[in-house]
Amino acid sequence: MEQTTSIKISQLAEEDRPREKLLLRGKSSLTDAELIAILIGSGTPSISAVDLSRHILASVNHDLAALARMSIQDLKKFKGIGEAKAISIVSALELGRRRKELEPRKRFKISSSKDVYELMKPELYDELVEHFYLLLLTRRNEVIKKERISQGGTSGTVVDAKVVFKSALDHHAQSIILVHNHPSGSLSPSEQDRRLTKRLSEIGKAMDLPVLDHVIFTDTGYFSFADEGIL
Image 1 (cartoon, rainbow, N blue to C red):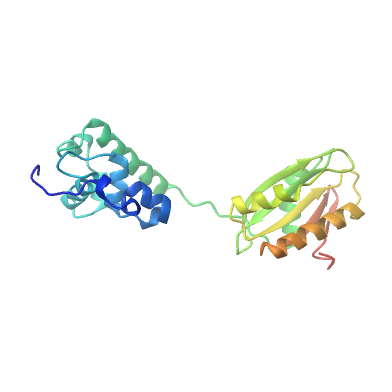
Image 2 (image 1 turned 90 degrees about the vertical axis):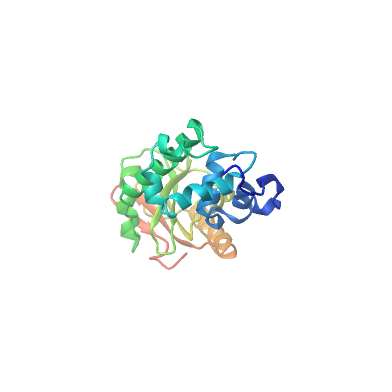
C-alpha cells in the first residue's frame, strides 16, 4: 500500500478538496470517501486521506452498513488509521445509526384559524401581558416552529419587522402566521393591530413569504384577520 500513487489533497484544485467542496457546493456533493476523509483529516506520505478512505470503503464493497460494523481495531489495521481516526469514524457512523432509529416527529398542520387558536393555548392562555408570536410554516402549512417575537404590557407590545422576517428566513419558512393575545379579553383588533398586519403583509408579499393570517387570542375566543377578509 505504501507504493500506491496518490495525489495529496493539498495538490488538488481548491474546489475539489473535501472541506472546500462542502463549503462551496454543499454536503450532498461529497462522495462517501470524501466525507470519511474529512473525518480522518489526513492520510500518509504516500496516500491522501481521500484515497485512504476509498481503500477502506473498497474493503467492505462500499457498504456503509458493513463499515459501521467495523471495530476500532478493525479500522486500525489500515495503514494511516490510528486510534483517534478510528474513533472518529466509529463515532460518526454511530450518530448516523441513532438518527436513523429516531422516529420523525409529525408536524402539526394548520388548516384553519381554529387550529392556530388551539395550538397557541399552552403559550397564551391566562397570560396577563401581551405576547407576540410567529408560526413558521412549511409549503404544506406544517408548523416548523412557534417563536415569540416580543412581550409587552397589558395593552401592547412592540414588533420589529426585521426580527419577524429574519426569523422566517433563518428557519426556511415558506409562510408565516402572526399571533398575539389581548389580556383584556377584547376580540376587536386595535388600529395599531391593523396597521401592523397591513405592513407585515406587504413586506411578506414583496419577499414571496406570505402572511397567511393574524390571529388575536383571548381566553374565550379569537379573531382572525383572514377569516374576516381584512388581511
